[in-house]
Length: 87
Image (cartoon, rainbow, N blue to C red; front, side, top):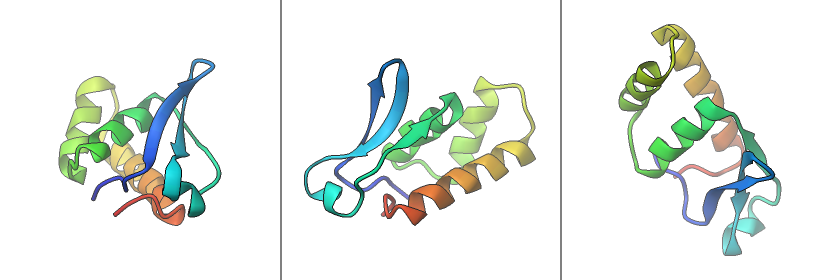
Protein backbone atom coordinates (compact mmCIF):
# COMPACT_ATOMS: atom_id res chain seq x y z
CA UNK A 1 0.00 0.00 0.00
CA UNK A 2 1.46 3.35 -1.01
CA UNK A 3 0.42 6.95 -1.56
CA UNK A 4 -0.20 7.73 -5.23
CA UNK A 5 2.12 10.10 -7.00
CA UNK A 6 0.97 13.71 -6.87
CA UNK A 7 -0.29 13.67 -3.27
CA UNK A 8 1.73 15.39 -0.56
CA UNK A 9 1.41 16.46 3.05
CA UNK A 10 2.10 20.16 3.51
CA UNK A 11 2.31 22.28 6.63
CA UNK A 12 -0.07 25.21 6.41
CA UNK A 13 -0.52 27.59 9.32
CA UNK A 14 1.04 25.09 11.72
CA UNK A 15 -1.14 22.15 10.64
CA UNK A 16 -0.48 19.35 8.18
CA UNK A 17 -2.89 18.74 5.32
CA UNK A 18 -2.89 16.40 2.33
CA UNK A 19 -3.18 18.16 -1.02
CA UNK A 20 -3.07 17.02 -4.64
CA UNK A 21 -0.60 18.49 -7.09
CA UNK A 22 -0.69 18.55 -10.89
CA UNK A 23 -2.71 15.81 -12.57
CA UNK A 24 -3.69 14.34 -9.18
CA UNK A 25 -5.81 17.43 -8.56
CA UNK A 26 -8.19 16.16 -11.27
CA UNK A 27 -9.18 13.22 -9.06
CA UNK A 28 -9.00 15.02 -5.69
CA UNK A 29 -9.55 18.73 -5.20
CA UNK A 30 -10.01 18.89 -1.44
CA UNK A 31 -7.75 18.62 1.57
CA UNK A 32 -7.42 16.13 4.39
CA UNK A 33 -6.27 17.49 7.75
CA UNK A 34 -3.72 15.32 9.56
CA UNK A 35 -3.26 15.05 13.31
CA UNK A 36 0.12 13.88 14.62
CA UNK A 37 -0.74 10.19 14.38
CA UNK A 38 -2.16 10.52 10.86
CA UNK A 39 0.98 12.42 9.81
CA UNK A 40 3.16 9.59 11.09
CA UNK A 41 1.03 7.04 9.25
CA UNK A 42 1.10 9.20 6.09
CA UNK A 43 4.89 9.45 6.19
CA UNK A 44 5.27 5.68 6.51
CA UNK A 45 2.71 4.97 3.77
CA UNK A 46 4.62 7.39 1.53
CA UNK A 47 7.66 5.15 1.99
CA UNK A 48 5.67 2.02 1.15
CA UNK A 49 5.58 0.59 4.68
CA UNK A 50 2.99 -2.08 5.44
CA UNK A 51 0.34 -1.97 8.17
CA UNK A 52 2.14 -4.02 10.83
CA UNK A 53 5.34 -1.97 10.57
CA UNK A 54 3.37 1.28 10.73
CA UNK A 55 1.37 0.11 13.75
CA UNK A 56 4.65 -0.81 15.47
CA UNK A 57 6.07 2.66 14.71
CA UNK A 58 2.99 4.36 16.18
CA UNK A 59 3.18 2.17 19.28
CA UNK A 60 6.82 3.22 19.76
CA UNK A 61 5.82 6.89 19.52
CA UNK A 62 2.63 6.94 21.62
CA UNK A 63 1.38 5.23 24.76
CA UNK A 64 -1.63 3.31 23.54
CA UNK A 65 -2.67 -0.24 22.73
CA UNK A 66 -2.37 -2.16 19.47
CA UNK A 67 -6.14 -2.52 18.97
CA UNK A 68 -6.63 1.25 19.13
CA UNK A 69 -3.77 1.93 16.70
CA UNK A 70 -5.00 -0.72 14.26
CA UNK A 71 -8.52 0.75 14.34
CA UNK A 72 -7.14 4.26 13.79
CA UNK A 73 -4.94 3.01 10.95
CA UNK A 74 -7.87 1.25 9.26
CA UNK A 75 -10.10 4.31 9.59
CA UNK A 76 -7.41 6.60 8.13
CA UNK A 77 -6.66 4.20 5.26
CA UNK A 78 -10.39 3.98 4.50
CA UNK A 79 -10.44 7.79 4.23
CA UNK A 80 -7.49 7.73 1.85
CA UNK A 81 -9.06 4.94 -0.23
CA UNK A 82 -12.32 6.86 -0.39
CA UNK A 83 -10.42 9.86 -1.78
CA UNK A 84 -8.60 7.60 -4.29
CA UNK A 85 -5.19 8.52 -2.82
CA UNK A 86 -3.74 5.01 -2.37
CA UNK A 87 -2.24 2.75 -5.04
